[in-house]
Length: 355
Ligand code: HEM
Ligand SMILES: Nc1nc2c(c(=O)[nH]1)N[C@H]1C(S)=C(S)[C@@H](COP(=O)(O)O)O[C@H]1N2
Ligand SMILES: [Mo]
Image (cartoon, rainbow, N blue to C red; front, side):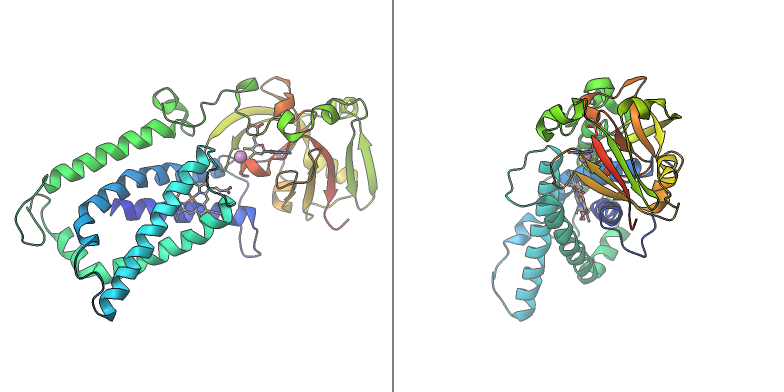
């Protein structure tokens, strides 16, 4: 049951993350509370990690049945065994690729998000079929007291049901607490297995450094300009000109798709002010383009609802100091409730879409 709850949380939060990154006309994602994506994606990775010991215990508890004879049998039996194969295979795939991804150990040779997304539907479909087929067994088992020795009526072998449940709960708690600190600040000190400690310049982790992105020279160049393009034309700003504009400060989290997150104080120009300076309307989407050479992270389109929000900044400062080169100097996007991967660093061009 708890494995089912964990997978349901994974699917719901995973779909949210998917549709923020692949917007559909019917999908609505708010700008408040500012920590909403931090919460949903943190929950994704936390419930995903909790699912790992739960799946191990589940597999252990049915292990002999997976190899029961006859291996082939009639058509019904073949179908049932095939569905179990799909179920177990897709679950192991989801949990292992997810874990490897947050550990940034890209041993698999495919691009993670589309594979993990497709297999999510397979896994969830297989679970629904499986629960449907097993409903009578599930009902019966849930109706029994925990201490009843054996559901199938055979002899008692191995640990008691209660001990298995307590052991599973303890393993799940340890796995969760050991990793959740990358999302939950007060768990940071006990989260010994969290892939992200939170270390980095200005107290924030860095996914890709300026060196790795190939922007060290262009970001520091005296020729640097931020170009803003809208219906009434285009304007280019030097860093000094940007610094001379009215500034706002907001406390906003960076919430990476990989689950880690950290809150910080960002200071910069309200994006909506820049957009209105080039004649853009609050109904327009806005494209952000990085100095980084074209690639999956070098540009993003901000939906109008986020582009016009007063907390959406072109940040020049972080936690009271000038933005570190690795955090996006000279300037970067920071918007509420957006996945970290869409908070583009080292901006060079901002375009009102359709202008
Ligand atoms: C049965 C369990 C799981 C299901 C059903 C599931 C489902 C999903 C879905 C639907 C997405 C959205 C993919 C997209 O943006 O197209 C996603 C993203 C993600 N999942 Fe899972 N997931 C599961 C387990 C896990 C686990 C165990 C982890 C890590 C410990 C994990 C880590 C991630 C990460 C890092 C992303 C973000 C990918 C990106 O946007 O780059 N998932 N998941
Ligand atoms: N141009 C560019 N912007 C980027 C990235 C990148 O690789 N290139 N990485 C993104 C990701 S995945 C995250 S989580 C955040 C991290 O921001 P930080 O390095 O300031 O913590 O930046 C985002 N902005
Ligand atoms: Mo990220």
